[in-house]
Picture 1: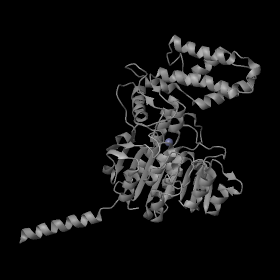
Picture 2 (picture 1 turned 180 degrees about the vertical axis):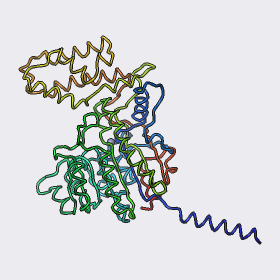
Picture 3 (picture 1 turned 90 degrees about the horizontal axis):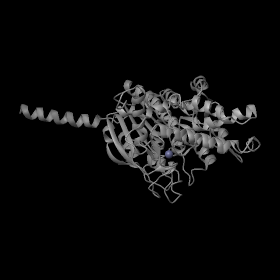
Picture 4 (picture 1 turned 45 degrees about the vertical axis):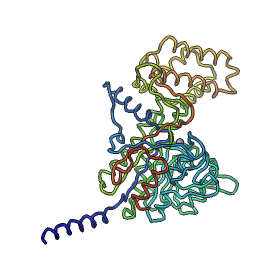
Length: 462
Ligand SMILES: [Zn+2]
């Protein structure tokens, strides 16, 4: 009899504790745009190499206990674009490249987990390092047959009613009578510009936009180019948590995108990529700190929408030399503007000596990064070919001229690291998943990108 009671009580305990098992109250969903497995491991090699040891140094998220691989192909192509991938990651539905938050029929909207969460009273924050109406963030609130309908997407942003948006500006805030700022204000949003402005306005705001300081800034600065006071993804993550925790009882869903990992890879710009990856990890650290204080209620998932650049961690030999990338001081785009400004100031073309000095300063060539004679010849030939045409012809098309020089510099930097970009576009490879916290064990193995939000939905009961 006694034994029966014990069995009964044990069974009752199991049933009750299973019923009481709660899903995550606080969900972080990080998407590294273009972040393939090589972007991640390459950054780990880089960190070890810079510190002078052989092996890897972990990022915050590579130490998460659960890892998986996500399939990224879209309904229309093995190589997805960001809107089809974003739609899969946000809504659980695969769609055609170019379509956002809709089925391939281009008329049936698909509901995102952010929208589902919000309907259930959960507070929602969406953040990115690119324009806030760009494909990845927009997949969580936008529904349109063409991802480039930015003004329409900007309008849908306000209609979402989500409590927080952070990132660069609206891409095309004003088209005809449709003004995205007015729409946001009419929908009850406070617009703040820069982190300090956010801090002074957040307290009295019901819903808020945290944009970068100037409306001209559509993307946040690359981490490698960042100046004091420029907004970062870590700032946005911090602000998002702060804003969500105004009503902690409601729980939150926060999506943060490292949108410029993709752009650095499209640009085949290796030093910029590494710094962008480290910056993404810094934003993850902010979430991880939160997790440490709320372990029993928090889930963090890190993944990517696709790989960009077909990054290979070899250029045909059995060695890589990642540490040279620490000597790159500017992104390719910033180097173009830098050269352009220099020529504008003086009105003179750059001499080879001056150009050589720039390459030393901004890329560490010759001084810190050893170049082969062949690599030096490549730079010199590109210089002669571009400036050989004479100063008179420089004025009309400076950008093109300098982009040719900057392309060559960045390409030689890539060679010096003994790595290789196989493409300027996305690729069809696997992307990684890393997870920690409540329910993280569900994100292992090979998972289709469209399954990820459905698992979150189930766990968090959206
Ligand atoms: Zn993308």
